[in-house]
Length: 331
Ligand SMILES: [Zn+2]
Image (cartoon, rainbow, N blue to C red; front, side, top):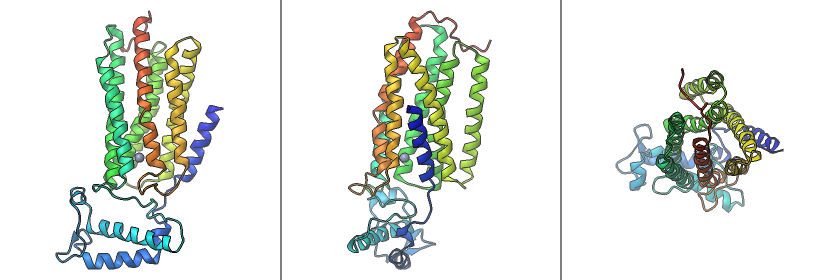
């Protein structure tokens, strides 16, 4: 039943993820006329710089985050158009596939950036817990190093998520998408490593080769700049669901084997799926900043506590058990 719900969410997300570059807002004549006039009156150098006699004065943070003159004109005309729509009794329109967000301290999507920082802090805190963990069993050390690497990959992902939501450019978009996929892939890789650790290293490496190869190919594809958002979302959802299902089956098996700590991973997987369902909603940002995507990032912020506390408890279990087969040596 849980799998059915996750797959249903995945399919729904795939269907709605095909972003389009044009939206009602930027197609409207109100917006186009405003933009033409603003750019003509204020910009020079192909819209990058402000004229010396420009009416518009850019604030300090927007200068720091390199907003061009055309970007500023788009922002001003976006809110002008939203006002006109509201006065005419129409709903808030989207612009270039996105809802209008109030910029704060030069940040494009401040709530998503703030929530990304919370996720980063949660991962950093649990990384510290992992570092302080004392495991004396020599054959477990590579596994502990793996989990520290896992936490570093996640911290890197949230750093780029923060940067992307602060300032959406081709490069920050590429880094956000590539690093988001790296987190999804690491969850799957971790599941494969955990399942095969005491069984077969050959099978483990064989199972790992597919996601690693696909990740490299997909990052190359993202770097090309011609991103099909629908396809990218499907790739993320496919590997995300696959990793989650393996973790769910594994932790359920541990739970039935009376390992009490396994509830944390079960709860993490179910809550992650529930949090993802927030993306099903698509509404104009509340208070100008909190849209469904920002709320999704906010809702995932506490989840690393559950996840890593499972990892630490599982490491302690492995350290205390007589699983001497646990070895990552390639010999
Ligand atoms: Zn995001």
